[in-house]
Image 1 (cartoon, rainbow, N blue to C red):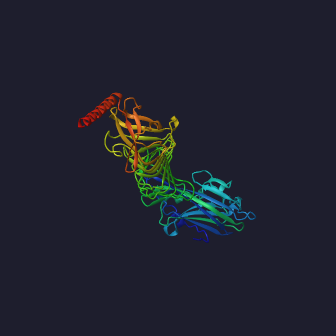
Image 2 (cartoon, rainbow, N blue to C red):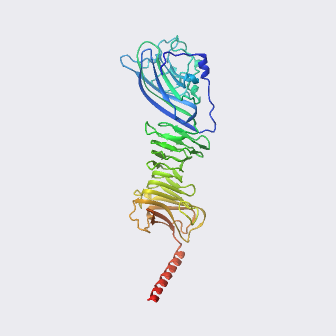
Image 3 (cartoon, rainbow, N blue to C red):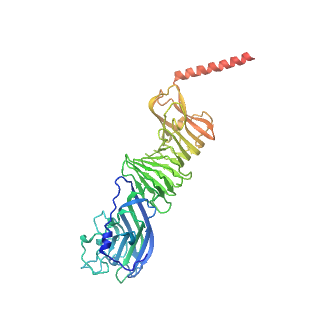
Amino acid sequence: MKRTNIQITAAFLAGLAFLGAASANAQEVTWLRNVEVNQTVSDRGQSVSLLDMANSGLGSISNVKVDLSLSSLTQDNPMWLGQIYASLTYGVASEEERTAVLLNRPGVSNSNAFGSSLSSLNVTFDDSVATNIFNVASETGTYQADGRLGVNPYGSRVAYSASDVNAGLSVLNGGLLQSQQLSLLVADTRQGAVARLDSWGVKITGTAASSGLLNLGAGGSVAATETTQSVGATVVSSSSGSGAVGLLAAVNQTLNLSGGLSGSGDFNKTGLGTVRVGNSSAFIGTLNVNGGKVVVDGTLASSSRTVVGNGSLLGGSGTLGALTLQRGATLTPGNSPGLLTAASAVWGAGATYEWQLGSLTGVAGTDWDLFRVAGTLDMSALSTNANDKFNLTLVSDGSYDLSSGYEWTFVQAANYTGLSSLALGTDITNLFQIATQGMDVGTDPANVRVLVGATSGGLTSLNVWAVPEPSSQSLFLLGLGGMLGLRLLRKRIKR
């Protein structure tokens, strides 16, 4: 696309007035793109750079910020900012495009023919700030867009008036257009030095689309704005660019990513609320849980990584790739209770497994929590030192008396690293700091042990054993001794 002149008409201004209303109940997303251009803006010429917004995941636009970097082609003949015009257009003429004026010969007025003498520019346009770019004083900083669409940059100079500002960044707001095309125009309006368009970028905030791909780009984000919201589109994070895609649910908010995750980049969960992740079999990147809780109820690719940080929780009944629990992280399988599966896992010292008991007897992963590792569970960071133990918190509704003794499988793994022995019955309680909630285990929690359990189907279990009270133990041993004596007597009789 190349334009040979700049035309400003009343009909065009009318077309800019369209503002689409965003749904008050829709979740907010931020779409980021940065474009390296490095194009010459020829003397009295133009440079145009296009950006496709396809798969942005946006349903509408509510806010736009723009980064722009200009420089001089040569130091011998430096750019004069006062002769530069720049605009950002969304859409094409056939669908009533919307144009924001970024630069309109900064500093040029009826008393200043040449305007700003800056020879480079690296700024952010954000109309929420107070200073218009017309009064730019530094090559860096954040400014309002010029916004004076009615002032012809090729015409006679006029006095600056804030009343002429009618095409700031807000004119880009509204519903999405069919073309989903952004066009940045940079023009040199006077004879003289030659400029260069180095790069530009946009940060567009709006409501999320209900389906398709939500490709936010490096550093974009999706955030809950209501108590409970769902995103039907698949959220994509690319490995290219810088910055992880953000997933934000503030306290008391739940963001349901029913369309799941995809891509090979990073996702950063922040905020004290909950993000629920649906099927994400195409996601091979890293999910960083840096606040609140993430519930995985779908399948992530086996090559994906999930890293749970300090103060954060991971739950759900889905399947993960490689899981890392850092110090202060909490694992809480299932959805009260349930089974969570991982391809491999690393348990950091000081991390926590919050294990929930739903029934005294039954099936692991259904009636009480179970964490299953198809490959290796690395426990090598754990030791008998108080600061290096793994926290095991046993939770029930308080109606169970466990003093007579029970045993439940809470972990299954094909391999273990960091355990000296996997012999059946090996006591590894000294690697754990055990606490209970809502359980009567006698001398609480001294009567709870962790033992190596049986191997079945290639998976070796770790079991929680609620040790019988001494009186119960005595009766148990007495009964066991009697049975052994009876069996011996029968043998002698047979002889």
